[in-house]
Amino acid sequence: MLKTHETLLRDTERNRKFYEALKQRVTPGCSVLDIGSGTGIWAIAAAKLGAGRVVAVDTDELLVGVIRMLADEHGVSDRVQAVCSSSFDLTAGREFDVVVSETIGFLGYDELIVQVMADARDRFLKDVGYIIPETIALYAAAGRVKRWTDIIPTGVDFSFDALTRLNLSSPRVLKRSRDVKLLTRPVRLVSTDLRRADSTPNLRELRAAWNLTANAEVDCVVVWVESRLAPGVSLSTRRTTSWRPTVYRIAPPSRPFERMEFSLSLTPESNYWTATYVGGEIRETGTYSPEYAATEMIVAARGGGKTNKLGHVLIARDGQRPMSIELREATSSDEEFLRTLYRSTRLDEVAKFGWSEGEQDAFLTMQFEMQKRGYAIQYPDAEHRIILCDGIQAGRIIVDRAGEMLTLTDIAILPDLRGRGIASRLIARLKRESDVILLHVDKQNNPARQLYESHGFVPTGETEFAFEMRWTRDGAG
Image (cartoon, rainbow, N blue to C red; front, side, top):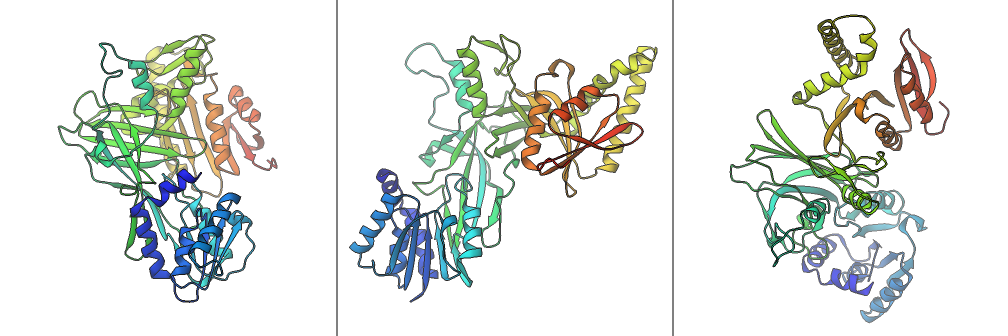
Protein backbone atom coordinates (compact mmCIF):
# COMPACT_ATOMS: atom_id res chain seq x y z
CA MET A 1 0.00 0.00 0.00
CA LEU A 2 2.63 2.53 1.03
CA LYS A 3 4.77 1.60 -1.97
CA THR A 4 1.86 2.52 -4.28
CA HIS A 5 1.44 5.90 -2.65
CA GLU A 6 5.16 6.50 -2.66
CA THR A 7 5.03 6.01 -6.44
CA LEU A 8 2.28 8.63 -6.65
CA LEU A 9 4.21 11.07 -4.49
CA ARG A 10 7.31 10.65 -6.68
CA ASP A 11 5.34 11.73 -9.77
CA THR A 12 6.68 15.25 -10.33
CA GLU A 13 4.32 16.08 -13.22
CA ARG A 14 1.25 14.98 -11.29
CA ASN A 15 2.30 16.83 -8.14
CA ARG A 16 3.07 20.11 -9.88
CA LYS A 17 -0.09 20.19 -11.94
CA PHE A 18 -2.50 19.37 -9.11
CA TYR A 19 -0.76 21.85 -6.83
CA GLU A 20 -0.96 24.54 -9.51
CA ALA A 21 -4.69 23.88 -9.91
CA LEU A 22 -5.23 24.10 -6.16
CA LYS A 23 -3.38 27.42 -6.02
CA GLN A 24 -5.86 28.77 -8.56
CA ARG A 25 -8.95 27.57 -6.74
CA VAL A 26 -8.19 27.69 -3.01
CA THR A 27 -8.94 31.05 -1.39
CA PRO A 28 -8.42 32.10 2.24
CA GLY A 29 -11.02 30.53 4.51
CA CYS A 30 -12.68 28.35 1.84
CA SER A 31 -13.85 24.77 2.34
CA VAL A 32 -12.26 21.88 0.39
CA LEU A 33 -13.31 18.24 -0.05
CA ASP A 34 -10.58 15.77 -1.09
CA ILE A 35 -12.09 12.49 -2.38
CA GLY A 36 -9.88 9.39 -2.48
CA SER A 37 -7.34 11.34 -0.48
CA GLY A 38 -4.70 8.60 -0.14
CA THR A 39 -1.89 10.08 1.95
CA GLY A 40 -3.75 13.40 2.09
CA ILE A 41 -1.29 15.42 0.03
CA TRP A 42 -3.95 17.66 -1.53
CA ALA A 43 -5.92 18.05 1.68
CA ILE A 44 -2.74 19.20 3.41
CA ALA A 45 -1.78 21.39 0.45
CA ALA A 46 -5.22 23.06 0.51
CA ALA A 47 -4.87 23.81 4.21
CA LYS A 48 -1.37 25.23 3.72
CA LEU A 49 -2.76 27.41 0.89
CA GLY A 50 -5.23 28.97 3.33
CA ALA A 51 -8.36 26.80 3.30
CA GLY A 52 -10.33 27.18 6.52
CA ARG A 53 -11.77 23.66 6.49
CA VAL A 54 -10.66 20.54 4.63
CA VAL A 55 -12.32 17.11 4.66
CA ALA A 56 -10.14 14.24 3.38
CA VAL A 57 -12.11 11.09 2.49
CA ASP A 58 -10.62 7.65 1.88
CA THR A 59 -11.96 4.11 2.19
CA ASP A 60 -8.73 2.74 3.70
CA GLU A 61 -8.73 3.07 7.48
CA LEU A 62 -4.93 2.84 7.67
CA LEU A 63 -4.52 5.68 5.17
CA VAL A 64 -6.89 7.80 7.22
CA GLY A 65 -4.43 7.38 10.07
CA VAL A 66 -1.56 8.42 7.77
CA ILE A 67 -3.48 11.56 6.75
CA ARG A 68 -3.91 12.51 10.41
CA MET A 69 -0.22 11.92 11.10
CA LEU A 70 0.90 14.06 8.15
CA ALA A 71 -1.61 16.81 8.89
CA ASP A 72 -0.22 16.99 12.41
CA GLU A 73 3.34 17.02 11.03
CA HIS A 74 2.49 20.04 8.87
CA GLY A 75 0.62 21.89 11.61
CA VAL A 76 -2.77 21.83 9.89
CA SER A 77 -4.54 19.11 11.88
CA ASP A 78 -6.94 21.74 13.27
CA ARG A 79 -8.27 22.33 9.73
CA VAL A 80 -7.96 18.86 8.15
CA GLN A 81 -10.57 16.25 9.04
CA ALA A 82 -9.79 12.72 7.83
CA VAL A 83 -12.85 10.48 7.31
CA CYS A 84 -12.90 6.75 6.54
CA SER A 85 -15.72 6.44 4.03
CA SER A 86 -16.67 6.19 0.40
CA SER A 87 -17.66 9.59 -0.91
CA PHE A 88 -20.97 8.04 -1.96
CA ASP A 89 -21.69 7.24 1.71
CA LEU A 90 -20.45 10.58 3.05
CA THR A 91 -23.03 12.70 4.86
CA ALA A 92 -22.45 16.40 4.32
CA GLY A 93 -24.25 19.37 2.85
CA ARG A 94 -23.44 21.58 -0.11
CA GLU A 95 -20.79 23.41 1.88
CA PHE A 96 -17.59 23.04 -0.14
CA ASP A 97 -16.02 25.62 -2.42
CA VAL A 98 -13.62 23.14 -4.01
CA VAL A 99 -13.79 19.38 -4.64
CA VAL A 100 -10.60 17.63 -5.73
CA SER A 101 -10.15 13.97 -6.65
CA GLU A 102 -7.46 11.90 -8.33
CA THR A 103 -9.71 8.93 -9.14
CA ILE A 104 -8.63 8.98 -12.80
CA GLY A 105 -6.85 5.69 -13.40
CA PHE A 106 -4.67 4.60 -16.31
CA LEU A 107 -7.60 4.76 -18.74
CA GLY A 108 -9.39 7.76 -17.32
CA TYR A 109 -12.75 6.22 -16.56
CA ASP A 110 -11.69 3.04 -14.75
CA GLU A 111 -12.00 4.51 -11.24
CA LEU A 112 -15.52 5.96 -11.65
CA ILE A 113 -14.33 9.58 -11.94
CA VAL A 114 -17.56 10.69 -13.67
CA GLN A 115 -19.85 9.21 -11.03
CA VAL A 116 -17.64 10.50 -8.21
CA MET A 117 -17.68 14.06 -9.51
CA ALA A 118 -21.36 14.03 -10.45
CA ASP A 119 -22.28 12.92 -6.94
CA ALA A 120 -19.95 15.51 -5.40
CA ARG A 121 -21.39 18.30 -7.57
CA ASP A 122 -24.94 17.42 -6.60
CA ARG A 123 -24.45 16.87 -2.87
CA PHE A 124 -21.34 18.70 -1.69
CA LEU A 125 -20.37 21.58 -3.99
CA LYS A 126 -21.69 25.09 -3.51
CA ASP A 127 -23.57 26.74 -6.37
CA VAL A 128 -20.45 28.74 -7.17
CA GLY A 129 -17.74 26.17 -6.64
CA TYR A 130 -14.94 24.38 -8.50
CA ILE A 131 -13.98 20.78 -9.17
CA ILE A 132 -10.51 19.43 -9.94
CA PRO A 133 -10.22 17.95 -12.57
CA GLU A 134 -12.69 19.74 -14.85
CA THR A 135 -12.45 17.56 -17.95
CA ILE A 136 -11.09 14.19 -18.94
CA ALA A 137 -10.40 12.64 -22.36
CA LEU A 138 -8.78 9.61 -23.97
CA TYR A 139 -6.41 10.05 -26.92
CA ALA A 140 -4.83 7.47 -29.22
CA ALA A 141 -2.03 7.33 -31.78
CA ALA A 142 -0.63 4.48 -33.85
CA GLY A 143 3.00 3.62 -33.29
CA ARG A 144 5.90 1.23 -33.47
CA VAL A 145 7.33 -0.56 -30.46
CA LYS A 146 11.06 0.07 -30.38
CA ARG A 147 12.30 -2.07 -27.52
CA TRP A 148 10.32 -5.32 -27.58
CA THR A 149 11.89 -8.02 -29.69
CA ASP A 150 9.91 -9.53 -32.56
CA ILE A 151 11.16 -13.06 -31.80
CA ILE A 152 11.20 -14.76 -28.40
CA PRO A 153 13.06 -16.32 -26.70
CA THR A 154 16.25 -14.42 -27.49
CA GLY A 155 19.69 -16.03 -27.48
CA VAL A 156 18.57 -19.38 -28.92
CA ASP A 157 17.82 -20.46 -32.48
CA PHE A 158 14.10 -21.20 -32.13
CA SER A 159 11.03 -19.08 -31.55
CA PHE A 160 7.80 -19.24 -29.53
CA ASP A 161 5.29 -18.17 -32.18
CA ALA A 162 2.27 -19.22 -30.11
CA LEU A 163 3.42 -17.10 -27.16
CA THR A 164 4.10 -14.16 -29.46
CA ARG A 165 0.55 -14.44 -30.78
CA LEU A 166 -0.92 -14.64 -27.27
CA ASN A 167 1.04 -11.55 -26.24
CA LEU A 168 -0.69 -9.52 -28.94
CA SER A 169 -3.95 -9.87 -26.96
CA SER A 170 -2.41 -8.54 -23.75
CA PRO A 171 -2.43 -4.73 -23.24
CA ARG A 172 0.80 -3.36 -21.81
CA VAL A 173 1.66 -0.33 -19.70
CA LEU A 174 4.12 2.02 -21.40
CA LYS A 175 6.67 2.72 -18.68
CA ARG A 176 9.06 4.72 -20.88
CA SER A 177 7.79 6.94 -23.68
CA ARG A 178 10.96 6.29 -25.68
CA ASP A 179 10.02 2.61 -25.99
CA VAL A 180 7.35 3.44 -28.59
CA LYS A 181 7.66 5.74 -31.59
CA LEU A 182 4.36 7.41 -32.46
CA LEU A 183 3.78 7.37 -36.23
CA THR A 184 0.49 9.29 -36.46
CA ARG A 185 -1.14 12.35 -35.01
CA PRO A 186 -3.16 11.86 -31.81
CA VAL A 187 -6.92 11.39 -32.18
CA ARG A 188 -9.40 12.01 -29.38
CA LEU A 189 -11.43 8.87 -28.68
CA VAL A 190 -13.83 10.31 -26.09
CA SER A 191 -14.05 13.30 -23.77
CA THR A 192 -16.16 14.30 -20.77
CA ASP A 193 -16.83 17.64 -19.09
CA LEU A 194 -16.90 16.62 -15.45
CA ARG A 195 -18.56 19.90 -14.50
CA ARG A 196 -21.74 18.78 -16.28
CA ALA A 197 -21.68 15.03 -16.99
CA ASP A 198 -23.82 12.71 -14.90
CA SER A 199 -22.75 9.32 -16.27
CA THR A 200 -19.81 7.62 -17.95
CA PRO A 201 -19.97 7.98 -21.74
CA ASN A 202 -20.37 5.00 -24.05
CA LEU A 203 -16.99 3.25 -24.09
CA ARG A 204 -18.08 0.28 -26.22
CA GLU A 205 -16.94 1.57 -29.60
CA LEU A 206 -14.19 4.14 -29.35
CA ARG A 207 -12.85 4.83 -32.83
CA ALA A 208 -9.89 6.44 -34.55
CA ALA A 209 -8.46 6.42 -38.07
CA TRP A 210 -5.19 7.56 -39.60
CA ASN A 211 -3.65 7.85 -43.04
CA LEU A 212 -0.41 5.89 -43.20
CA THR A 213 2.81 6.71 -44.94
CA ALA A 214 4.27 4.15 -47.32
CA ASN A 215 6.97 3.06 -44.87
CA ALA A 216 4.89 3.14 -41.67
CA GLU A 217 5.61 -0.01 -39.64
CA VAL A 218 2.67 0.11 -37.27
CA ASP A 219 2.44 -2.60 -34.62
CA CYS A 220 0.58 -0.91 -31.76
CA VAL A 221 -1.83 1.83 -30.73
CA VAL A 222 -1.04 3.92 -27.65
CA VAL A 223 -3.93 5.27 -25.54
CA TRP A 224 -3.52 7.89 -22.82
CA VAL A 225 -5.45 10.37 -20.68
CA GLU A 226 -5.55 14.15 -21.11
CA SER A 227 -7.20 16.11 -18.30
CA ARG A 228 -7.76 19.81 -17.66
CA LEU A 229 -7.43 20.43 -13.94
CA ALA A 230 -8.08 24.18 -14.04
CA PRO A 231 -7.88 26.94 -16.67
CA GLY A 232 -4.44 26.72 -18.26
CA VAL A 233 -3.49 23.63 -16.21
CA SER A 234 -3.54 20.36 -18.14
CA LEU A 235 -2.24 16.93 -17.24
CA SER A 236 -1.24 14.20 -19.69
CA THR A 237 -0.46 10.64 -18.66
CA ARG A 238 2.15 10.62 -21.42
CA ARG A 239 4.26 12.68 -19.03
CA THR A 240 3.30 11.30 -15.62
CA THR A 241 5.17 8.46 -13.95
CA SER A 242 2.39 7.05 -11.74
CA TRP A 243 -0.29 6.94 -14.44
CA ARG A 244 0.91 5.42 -17.70
CA PRO A 245 -0.33 5.15 -21.29
CA THR A 246 -1.65 1.78 -22.38
CA VAL A 247 -0.19 -0.02 -25.40
CA TYR A 248 -2.55 -2.14 -27.52
CA ARG A 249 -0.38 -4.37 -29.68
CA ILE A 250 -1.47 -5.43 -33.16
CA ALA A 251 -0.04 -7.59 -35.91
CA PRO A 252 1.78 -5.53 -38.56
CA PRO A 253 0.08 -5.50 -41.99
CA SER A 254 1.10 -8.02 -44.61
CA ARG A 255 1.92 -5.22 -47.05
CA PRO A 256 1.80 -1.38 -47.13
CA PHE A 257 -1.68 0.10 -46.71
CA GLU A 258 -2.95 3.65 -47.11
CA ARG A 259 -5.11 3.88 -44.00
CA MET A 260 -5.63 2.33 -40.60
CA GLU A 261 -8.88 2.16 -38.62
CA PHE A 262 -8.89 1.37 -34.89
CA SER A 263 -11.73 0.56 -32.52
CA LEU A 264 -11.54 -0.08 -28.78
CA SER A 265 -14.12 -1.35 -26.30
CA LEU A 266 -13.60 -0.61 -22.61
CA THR A 267 -16.43 -1.98 -20.50
CA PRO A 268 -16.69 -4.59 -17.73
CA GLU A 269 -18.32 -6.92 -20.27
CA SER A 270 -16.04 -6.25 -23.23
CA ASN A 271 -12.35 -5.46 -23.48
CA TYR A 272 -11.15 -5.82 -27.04
CA TRP A 273 -9.61 -3.86 -29.87
CA THR A 274 -9.69 -4.12 -33.65
CA ALA A 275 -7.22 -2.80 -36.22
CA THR A 276 -8.16 -2.67 -39.89
CA TYR A 277 -5.70 -1.76 -42.62
CA VAL A 278 -7.35 -0.30 -45.71
CA GLY A 279 -6.03 -0.03 -49.25
CA GLY A 280 -8.60 0.62 -51.96
CA GLU A 281 -11.13 -2.24 -51.76
CA ILE A 282 -8.75 -4.44 -49.76
CA ARG A 283 -9.15 -4.62 -45.99
CA GLU A 284 -7.02 -6.58 -43.54
CA THR A 285 -8.51 -6.88 -40.06
CA GLY A 286 -7.21 -8.20 -36.76
CA THR A 287 -9.15 -8.40 -33.50
CA TYR A 288 -7.56 -8.83 -30.08
CA SER A 289 -8.69 -9.35 -26.51
CA PRO A 290 -7.38 -10.85 -23.26
CA GLU A 291 -10.39 -13.16 -23.57
CA TYR A 292 -8.91 -14.58 -26.77
CA ALA A 293 -5.63 -15.43 -25.09
CA ALA A 294 -7.30 -16.86 -21.99
CA THR A 295 -9.67 -19.01 -24.04
CA GLU A 296 -6.88 -20.34 -26.21
CA MET A 297 -4.81 -21.29 -23.17
CA ILE A 298 -7.78 -22.99 -21.50
CA VAL A 299 -8.59 -24.97 -24.63
CA ALA A 300 -4.96 -26.05 -24.96
CA ALA A 301 -4.89 -27.08 -21.30
CA ARG A 302 -7.98 -29.22 -21.82
CA GLY A 303 -6.60 -31.12 -24.74
CA GLY A 304 -6.07 -28.68 -27.57
CA GLY A 305 -8.18 -27.63 -30.53
CA LYS A 306 -7.84 -26.47 -34.07
CA THR A 307 -7.13 -22.90 -35.16
CA ASN A 308 -8.23 -20.68 -37.99
CA LYS A 309 -5.90 -18.86 -40.37
CA LEU A 310 -5.48 -16.08 -37.81
CA GLY A 311 -4.20 -18.56 -35.26
CA HIS A 312 -7.26 -18.26 -33.00
CA VAL A 313 -8.68 -21.45 -31.52
CA LEU A 314 -12.00 -22.29 -33.14
CA ILE A 315 -13.31 -25.55 -31.71
CA ALA A 316 -12.20 -27.80 -28.90
CA ARG A 317 -12.47 -31.56 -29.17
CA ASP A 318 -16.08 -31.54 -28.04
CA GLY A 319 -16.87 -29.26 -30.99
CA GLN A 320 -18.68 -26.70 -28.86
CA ARG A 321 -16.05 -24.21 -27.67
CA PRO A 322 -17.71 -20.74 -27.49
CA MET A 323 -16.06 -18.45 -30.01
CA SER A 324 -14.67 -15.01 -29.38
CA ILE A 325 -17.41 -12.73 -30.68
CA GLU A 326 -16.81 -9.13 -31.74
CA LEU A 327 -18.63 -6.57 -33.87
CA ARG A 328 -17.45 -4.09 -36.48
CA GLU A 329 -19.28 -1.61 -38.66
CA ALA A 330 -20.63 -2.99 -41.95
CA THR A 331 -19.18 -1.32 -45.04
CA SER A 332 -19.73 -1.47 -48.79
CA SER A 333 -17.07 -4.17 -49.02
CA ASP A 334 -19.38 -6.49 -47.04
CA GLU A 335 -22.15 -6.39 -49.67
CA GLU A 336 -21.39 -9.79 -51.18
CA PHE A 337 -21.08 -11.41 -47.76
CA LEU A 338 -24.43 -9.94 -46.68
CA ARG A 339 -26.06 -11.16 -49.88
CA THR A 340 -24.71 -14.67 -49.24
CA LEU A 341 -25.84 -14.51 -45.63
CA TYR A 342 -29.37 -13.50 -46.59
CA ARG A 343 -29.48 -16.27 -49.20
CA SER A 344 -28.53 -18.81 -46.51
CA THR A 345 -31.51 -17.77 -44.35
CA ARG A 346 -34.06 -18.27 -47.16
CA LEU A 347 -32.57 -21.01 -49.33
CA ASP A 348 -34.41 -23.98 -47.77
CA GLU A 349 -37.71 -22.13 -48.03
CA VAL A 350 -37.21 -21.06 -51.66
CA ALA A 351 -35.91 -24.50 -52.73
CA LYS A 352 -39.41 -25.89 -52.08
CA PHE A 353 -40.83 -23.70 -54.86
CA GLY A 354 -39.45 -26.05 -57.52
CA TRP A 355 -37.59 -23.26 -59.33
CA SER A 356 -34.28 -23.61 -61.14
CA GLU A 357 -31.12 -22.48 -59.39
CA GLY A 358 -31.00 -19.36 -61.55
CA GLU A 359 -34.59 -18.46 -60.70
CA GLN A 360 -33.90 -18.97 -57.01
CA ASP A 361 -30.83 -16.71 -57.15
CA ALA A 362 -32.73 -14.00 -59.01
CA PHE A 363 -35.59 -14.12 -56.49
CA LEU A 364 -33.31 -14.07 -53.44
CA THR A 365 -31.28 -11.18 -54.88
CA MET A 366 -34.48 -9.19 -55.38
CA GLN A 367 -35.66 -10.01 -51.84
CA PHE A 368 -32.27 -9.01 -50.39
CA GLU A 369 -32.44 -5.61 -52.11
CA MET A 370 -36.04 -5.11 -50.94
CA GLN A 371 -35.06 -5.95 -47.36
CA LYS A 372 -32.13 -3.54 -47.49
CA ARG A 373 -34.31 -0.70 -48.78
CA GLY A 374 -37.02 -1.50 -46.26
CA TYR A 375 -34.62 -1.34 -43.31
CA ALA A 376 -33.16 1.93 -44.62
CA ILE A 377 -36.63 3.50 -44.74
CA GLN A 378 -37.98 2.08 -41.49
CA TYR A 379 -34.80 2.32 -39.42
CA PRO A 380 -32.67 5.10 -41.00
CA ASP A 381 -30.48 5.50 -37.91
CA ALA A 382 -29.91 1.81 -37.19
CA GLU A 383 -26.40 0.49 -36.61
CA HIS A 384 -25.35 -2.24 -39.06
CA ARG A 385 -22.61 -4.47 -37.65
CA ILE A 386 -20.76 -7.50 -38.97
CA ILE A 387 -20.42 -10.31 -36.43
CA LEU A 388 -16.87 -11.64 -36.21
CA CYS A 389 -16.13 -15.02 -34.65
CA ASP A 390 -12.43 -15.33 -33.97
CA GLY A 391 -11.92 -12.57 -36.52
CA ILE A 392 -13.92 -14.29 -39.29
CA GLN A 393 -17.22 -13.00 -40.72
CA ALA A 394 -20.01 -15.04 -39.16
CA GLY A 395 -23.16 -12.97 -39.48
CA ARG A 396 -24.73 -9.55 -39.08
CA ILE A 397 -26.78 -7.68 -36.51
CA ILE A 398 -28.82 -4.50 -36.95
CA VAL A 399 -29.76 -2.50 -33.87
CA ASP A 400 -31.79 0.71 -33.77
CA ARG A 401 -31.19 2.95 -30.76
CA ALA A 402 -33.00 6.01 -32.11
CA GLY A 403 -36.23 5.63 -30.11
CA GLU A 404 -37.00 5.38 -26.42
CA MET A 405 -36.29 1.65 -26.52
CA LEU A 406 -33.71 -0.49 -28.26
CA THR A 407 -34.96 -2.34 -31.35
CA LEU A 408 -33.21 -5.53 -32.46
CA THR A 409 -33.98 -5.11 -36.14
CA ASP A 410 -32.25 -8.21 -37.46
CA ILE A 411 -29.72 -10.84 -36.51
CA ALA A 412 -28.47 -13.59 -38.85
CA ILE A 413 -25.73 -16.22 -38.51
CA LEU A 414 -24.12 -18.37 -41.19
CA PRO A 415 -25.53 -21.95 -41.20
CA ASP A 416 -22.26 -23.64 -40.17
CA LEU A 417 -22.06 -21.47 -37.04
CA ARG A 418 -25.65 -21.70 -35.84
CA GLY A 419 -26.30 -23.48 -32.58
CA ARG A 420 -23.04 -22.27 -31.03
CA GLY A 421 -24.64 -19.64 -28.78
CA ILE A 422 -23.51 -16.66 -30.88
CA ALA A 423 -26.93 -15.00 -31.08
CA SER A 424 -27.55 -15.70 -27.38
CA ARG A 425 -24.35 -13.97 -26.35
CA LEU A 426 -25.17 -10.92 -28.46
CA ILE A 427 -28.70 -10.73 -27.08
CA ALA A 428 -27.26 -10.94 -23.56
CA ARG A 429 -25.04 -7.96 -24.35
CA LEU A 430 -28.05 -5.95 -25.53
CA LYS A 431 -29.94 -6.84 -22.35
CA ARG A 432 -27.12 -5.36 -20.28
CA GLU A 433 -27.36 -2.18 -22.33
CA SER A 434 -31.12 -1.45 -22.33
CA ASP A 435 -34.15 -1.79 -20.07
CA VAL A 436 -36.51 -2.49 -22.99
CA ILE A 437 -35.84 -4.37 -26.26
CA LEU A 438 -38.33 -4.72 -29.11
CA LEU A 439 -38.11 -7.08 -32.09
CA HIS A 440 -40.19 -8.76 -34.81
CA VAL A 441 -39.81 -12.41 -35.74
CA ASP A 442 -41.20 -14.17 -38.80
CA LYS A 443 -44.11 -16.43 -37.90
CA GLN A 444 -42.45 -19.28 -39.79
CA ASN A 445 -39.17 -18.95 -37.91
CA ASN A 446 -39.87 -21.16 -34.91
CA PRO A 447 -36.19 -21.61 -33.86
CA ALA A 448 -35.73 -17.83 -33.64
CA ARG A 449 -38.95 -17.41 -31.67
CA GLN A 450 -37.88 -20.12 -29.23
CA LEU A 451 -34.50 -18.41 -28.83
CA TYR A 452 -36.13 -15.09 -27.98
CA GLU A 453 -38.55 -16.74 -25.57
CA SER A 454 -35.60 -18.37 -23.78
CA HIS A 455 -34.25 -14.86 -23.21
CA GLY A 456 -37.50 -13.65 -21.68
CA PHE A 457 -39.12 -12.02 -24.74
CA VAL A 458 -42.90 -12.23 -24.78
CA PRO A 459 -45.34 -11.67 -27.70
CA THR A 460 -47.02 -8.26 -27.59
CA GLY A 461 -48.67 -8.13 -31.03
CA GLU A 462 -48.59 -9.53 -34.54
CA THR A 463 -48.91 -8.67 -38.19
CA GLU A 464 -49.81 -10.93 -41.10
CA PHE A 465 -46.27 -12.26 -41.29
CA ALA A 466 -44.53 -11.58 -37.96
CA PHE A 467 -44.89 -11.58 -34.19
CA GLU A 468 -43.88 -8.52 -32.21
CA MET A 469 -41.93 -9.49 -29.09
CA ARG A 470 -40.66 -7.43 -26.20
CA TRP A 471 -38.21 -7.90 -23.33
CA THR A 472 -38.15 -5.65 -20.26
CA ARG A 473 -35.74 -5.72 -17.37
CA ASP A 474 -38.55 -5.85 -14.86
CA GLY A 475 -40.19 -8.75 -16.73
CA ALA A 476 -43.41 -6.83 -17.40
CA GLY A 477 -43.29 -7.65 -21.13
